[in-house]
Amino acid sequence: MKAEKICKSFGENKVLIEFSHEFAEGKTTAILGASGCGKSTLLNILMGLLAPDSGEVIRESDKISAVFQENRLCENLTASANIRLVTGKRLTKSEIIAELSAVGLGECSEKAVKTLSGGMKRRTALVRALLAEYDILFLDEPFKGLDINTKNAVIAYTKAKIAGKTVVLVTHDLSECEQLADEIIRL
Image (spheres, rainbow, N blue to C red):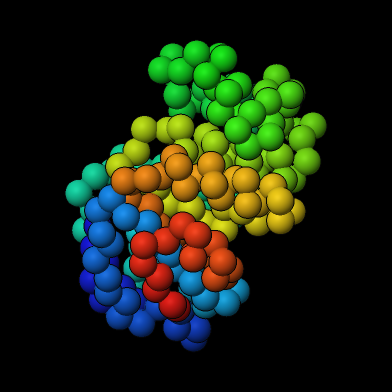
């Protein structure tokens, strides 16, 4: 995937000015920066959800998966059912429960998402994105709201799942970059 001279403004606020980068296939690229510097805007442009004012994104594939800043789960469905939305019949119920167990959610697999805490919802959204079939994975602050022990366990799980995959990670946390990224871009 390649971004060429991406510019984006919101009114007078110039968020991205001629951003260019070639994202290495099979590697994790972290986009690091303070809140409000344009990380999520860039990610939305890379995913094709937001048009740049100028410049272009060249993606070989439209087969993407994502974790957004908001969890975007189906609140009335169970954690397992939310994952089943992306896996179809590719995984058995016990395989899905095993994946949820790996992030500390095994006992919550059959609970409606609306009954889960924010951190539990976050982990469900992440597992769902990781288990989808994709060529490029986009992660926007995927570990926000997790306590340090849970966060470290979920980062280890994520690292194992994304090995050899093309991933773009947006974060303001340098330690997340150091644990997961092959390359860091500072915005």
